[in-house]
Image (tube, rainbow, N blue to C red):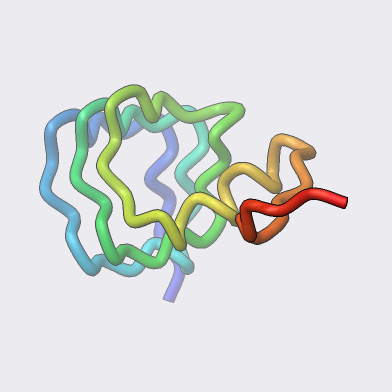
Length: 79
């Protein structure tokens, strides 16, 4: 199933455990929304307002990799 949620205002929404993988969410506003445990799919932090969004740490990797960051496990010891 596919949904067009472009430009939708989800500010302060509780979307815990939701599945956004089949949705286009370009330019949507998720400011201060609770997305813990949500499947974020194509949510693009470069075109989406995610200020103050609540997510679990394991959800960070996918969002930050979209920005070109390379994420390494934190083992507290560098070569």
